[in-house]
Image (cartoon, rainbow, N blue to C red):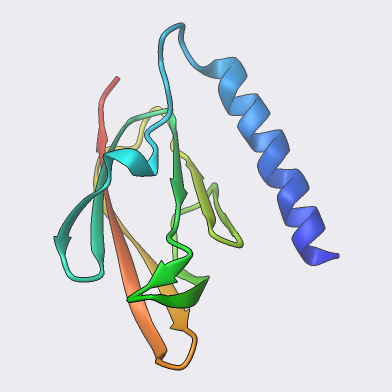
Length: 119
C-alpha cells in the first residue's frame, strides 16, 4: 500500500513537473550518468527541472535493491526510480546517498553527486 501511495505521488509530481517545464527542456536522465569513482555517479540538472534516474537492476551481475539514506526535499525513490524536483533557487553540488543491497553480497552505498546549474 505504501509503495502504491509513493508511486501515485511520483506520477502526480512528474505530471506537475512536466507542466512547468519550458518548451524543448527535458529532464536529466540516467543516460547522461558519468561514473567518476566506484559507486558514485554524477549528474547535472538545471535549477527548477526534475532529475530522473533509473538505478541499475544488477550490480556485478547480482540483483540489487535500493533505499534512500540521505536525500534532499522533494525527492523520492520508488523501487529503482529516483526523482528529484529541484527548485529554481537551488544551486551547487549536492550528494544523494542511497543504500544498495546486493543479493548474496550484502549492503553498500551508492552516491549520486548532483550539480544544479542556474536556468
